[in-house]
Length: 155
Image (cartoon, rainbow, N blue to C red; front, side, top):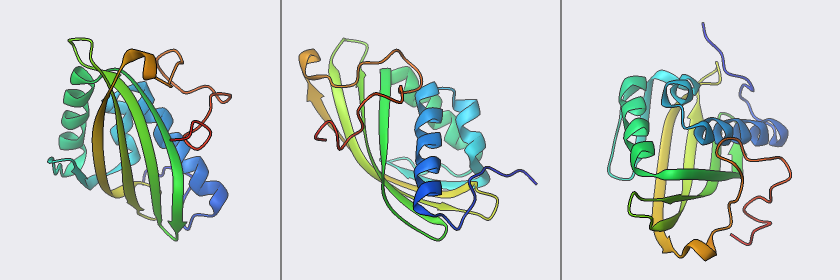
């Protein structure tokens, strides 16, 4: 049986680790790799999409990252209890016309005993920003450890 540590029940420390691992995965923009953190029968609510299972989740992520260029994400732990974690996040991206956006949101996650996410409920709002308003400046991929988080950036 596949496992994805850290495993529930989560402490503050392990919840923070789980959030950072999720952030790192999504910043890779490798949909096939990202969905391995989710159970085979995972259920999502993501904006107006409701994928069920890894295959549908992967297809959603592939569409997302074709549309959201130069994607950079920061996640921050909001709360945790047992096998659930709540996060807030922001990410910056541009469309193919060069318009920049910052997307803000909250996610509620539930994990099985193997540490795979079985439910993901995301609420997301997009805000157009000028290129000069961007705050996420690291090379594409993992956010460097010394880059400020959401609270540090006043977000």
